[in-house]
Picture 1 (cartoon, helix red, strand yellow):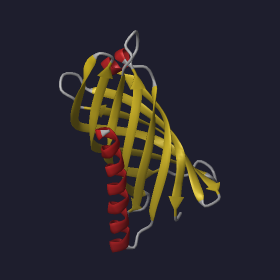
Picture 2 (cartoon, helix red, strand yellow):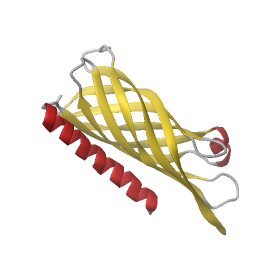
Picture 3 (tube, helix red, strand yellow):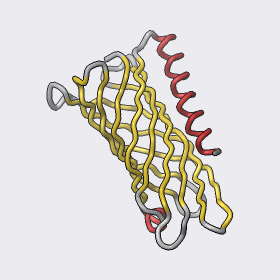
Picture 4 (cartoon, one colour):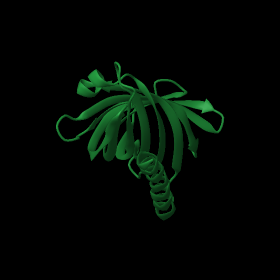
Length: 184
């Protein structure tokens, strides 16, 4: 339950921060919702199978062409491998810099992003107490925005997220598909 509040609080905070920034600077704000597959890697990948995630983000443009700022919240669940009836839940958010690349076609716009964040990682297993660790995180990746979907813009993106939990970091690739709403 704690993770759900982290994710919801991050999304609400992202929306509020972006709306305030947009009001103060009269810049366009875009909100996005999506979800997809979470692919664990490293020691996390040896213990958990692929899972799912939901993603909410707010993007505020900047005065610098092709540069924007994004705040996102993510909630992910991956099941443990083997005989354990457990799972790992990850919730938190990232503040990123987003750079839009030149259009590759009339309706396609690639982008790259990188940022830092804070996430909580909770692991539960049958007949064992759950463990929870919170830590700073770094993420980086890229995506492709698809224009021309009416009032919305579609997107697909893949990021690498490393949460610097004590001992070994928790690393995963969230691959997301979703829609962006707001002014173009």
